[in-house]
Image (tube, rainbow over all chains, first blue to last red; front, side, top):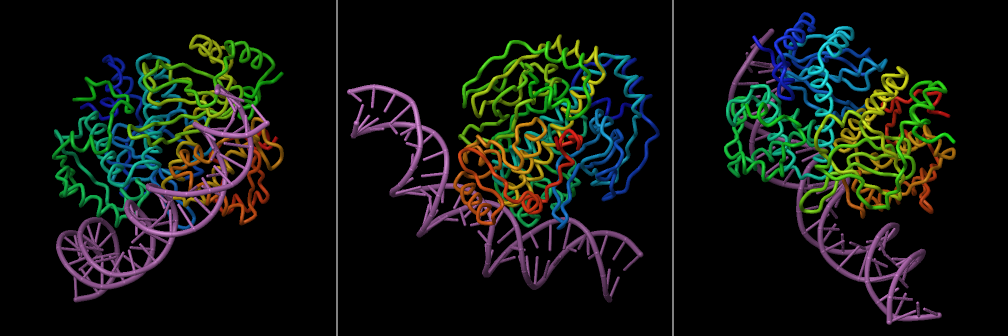
Length: 240
Length: 240
DNA sequence: CGGCTGGTTGATTGGTTTCAACAAGCGTGG
DNA sequence: CCACGCTTGTTGAAACCAATCAACCAGCCG
């Protein structure tokens, strides 16, 4: 059974059978985390976890209750391996749905990258892609309107989920609540609701049963000015 | 003469004399870039440059002219070394003032990290700090009000400039125009102007002659809810 | 049944943008 | 030398996008 972490890394580079075996062996015993529970808190000792199932996020919470989701973590994604260099985490990680995640120890990680140049490359590239996504979010929050922002996120999620084989054609699971979307896009849930209605009214998407259906992918991409280059997925693997 | 790149890396970890020599030797011949000129464009072949003098930024420019400055680069900072793994840049880099920068080749970089664990650590830590700053900017753009955002940026710049020895006490050079600030904070220059006036009215800062004077550092930090932890500067070196 | 979460809609407020005009500084060229 | 254009900063008035406040509904679960 190929897990999404393999799929994700293979969207960057071809992995040999040995690579795949090593990578799978490096994962510790998976553990489950309840929806809405914290995976790690600010100030914790850093640890590297790979998300095998479910959606999670990095977030910052302010004293007065305001919350900003800083990045979304989808199945097959991990937190930055280099984070082990720090002695305390600078942000919290939370489960948005029920999640299962597998730890990788620092030693296992070092062994992996020492053994396989391909894995080393794939892991570094994952870090670069994460940074690039973070920059794109910065640009979105700074300069895109509400409807562009939401459309852009939907496009991004479509591409990222497709890369790990979790999208069915032009629709995909959408477990986020409107509040979660609001916290990710720097808005209120009320306004997300209205923007969602507008997108529906334009015939671009509909959201039923926690599942997003993109009726007009190119229309959505055009509205959002979406260009998938920043995700750094290799087109072949990324497409399917 | 110690250059700011040394200062910056030493704010993370102690470097031996050999480390300092190796690092200095790794830098190629410095070149000057005019203010407002591009250092690299989207789609360029990636190269690692260290900024020795002047301020620069990473930015994204949309087709309709909207611009978002995604991160600021201060003297002593470099672009992500791992970027060499990619075949095209996903963002543009521009000089905000006249800059001088020195290239580091991939080979020189590999030699450095192979020779010195301290340098390897410092460079990785620089990457982590950059990522952390990027997350903080995301949080700022998403959830902070105009005045908090500006105050937070001023606090951040004070800490970062202090780390490379470019702040004089509680004031520092501020070469950014109000338009630049607007593009960094996701606002219009008109509103930056008004927000600046508000900060001045509160007696927190004043901005004269391209130099920012912080009259009430703790008041400014309190308004911004600023906590320097995310910069990952070691306190001693960071303080000076 | 009652309480809770998540979604929906309307009315109102308010922070920020947009548009517009103008002043100050500064380099350039006639 | 001064006129001119250009950039940067400043301020006012109006328009607008999104937040806030509030009410209500549906589904779910103890």
